[in-house]
Image 1 (cartoon, protein in one colour):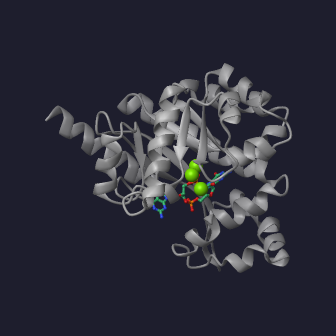
Image 2 (tube, protein in one colour):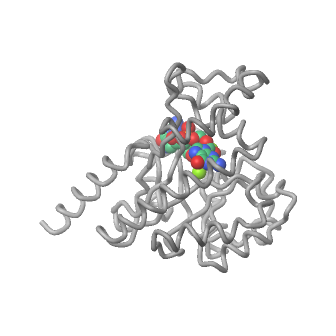
Image 3 (cartoon, protein in one colour):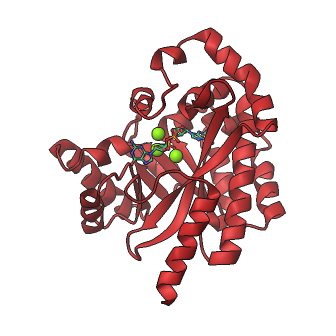
Length: 281
Ligand code: C2E
Ligand code: MG
Ligand code: MG
Ligand code: MG
């Protein structure tokens, strides 16, 4: 599961701790201050367009560097925040940073798509639409350059139904179904959600070379998505070999360590600059 797979990379992330109510409450009580005091920041992971072999966008990922506890995994603090209204401040913080950078990158480097994760809880916020619009307007970003990622289970469990998603779609924002294949995905559901993109969960992608069932899952998801006119992003692409397999399968976009790790915006900008120099050379 997500928590244990992340555990390998996060020294301070202990799946047991997720169940610890005191730990959660202490994280929650510190989160707002941590945001205000610059302990929370946004990392950007590049997304590779497999048709052009160029970086076409990035996913914004929340990071918390705690002064005493060191890096805390988003799996811990996002999960805690989602169970309270703290998720609103965190979401708007990440959205604001991501949209600001996307607007700058679009001005300096041309078309660039920015993906931001949206918790299901945010869908119950009646002012979500106006908040998203305000951020886009303030930074001058074309809504078509913003993608909001939602997990399938999250969207279904939101209780508010899919109406807010149609509002966002009408605003011109793209909707992506994150971690596809891990939730209770039904064809019916896929038809109902106005998503232009499906993001295949990294669990399937990572093992599709060695496990036939995972390969079948990836292949059939790509076929299904394409027949519904949706674009496919594969996440967790860790090797060159997996990247080549995805190209052969006509997957549109790849995200994963072989393309690039989540990094600072400076590293992302350097990468775009190097790519542009290579193109004009
Ligand atoms: P996600 O949205 O599915 O993001 C992908 C996760 O996979 C990220 O973990 C990323 O660092 C990791 N990853 C990317 N490529 C690879 C790879 O090749 N191999 C492996 N092993 N891992 C890879 P991260 O940053 O720890 O985030 C975990 C989850 O926390 C995210 O999963 C997302 O659900 C949530 N999250 C992160 N930031 C935010 C946020 O701002 N808002 C909300 N609501 N959720 C967030
Ligand atoms: Mg995501
Ligand atoms: Mg995902
Ligand atoms: Mg995930």
